[in-house]
Image (cartoon, rainbow, N blue to C red; front, side, top):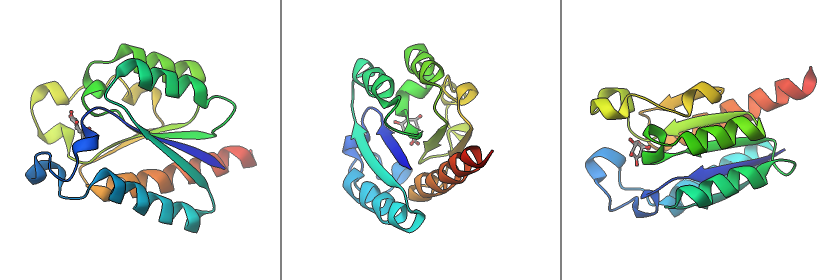
Length: 148
Ligand code: DQA
């Protein structure tokens, strides 16, 4: 099973970006923890990060036929991007949305997600664990789908 991990805008700055909200781990550290977990779960992952909405849409479109699921932290585009939501709906791959912070506990504009309605589910507020739990949930979901 191959899973594409997508990190949205400003997540390249993790480690130094508002550490009181997002923690002190860098994106590389998050990606290496995901890689370790992927080995345990017996899946392969590739990750990309982009600050550009178009590049994220392109990555989602290219996932079709190559990956069996998408783990995505759309970051600020969660709250604004119809294009990312439409791309996810178009490729119709099981998607899990993750956030380091609890978006529902923060400013009101972060409470709405354009991605949530096209995702299998959302995990928010557990820092690195949001990604790790999200990967576990996604791999389970895809395995179950393949059984039926
Ligand atoms: C985020 C939450 C978003 O509201 C914010 O714009 C981000 C990161 C998170 O992981 O907590 O950039 O997706």
